[in-house]
Image (cartoon, rainbow, N blue to C red; front, side):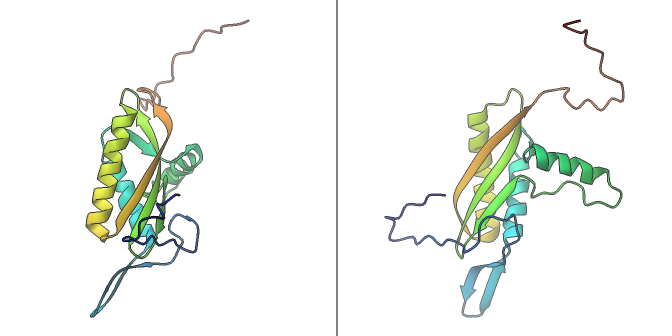
Length: 165
């Protein structure tokens, strides 16, 4: 992540640990004369994931491996189901946050416009709920979901004729 170093009025705080998807300890979000408020990075991660999924055109979150593990978790009785934080990595400092998202887009959605909408929604939700300044939201589009890719009608897909014999 790059941050402008010539900005003297807004110091950038960098955490001592790399992005670990919520495993870092809580960070300071508010320090008043009456006490401190801390917000765990997992909270920021969950808010960002929910806000990204709210945007029409986002089919799912995460890369292929995390989506596969999510599908397995959904099928396990008593499992936690899909994680709201799948496909979301965050760095949380004392007053700022940086967010990386991995998304799968619905076929036909304009990716550039969709990324703008996701970025705007995530920044708004995180800043409004936590008071942290979101300095960047990086979006990686990993796949496009085609209509009928996961047809759950229970009927087998028609067999494709062999192209070569």
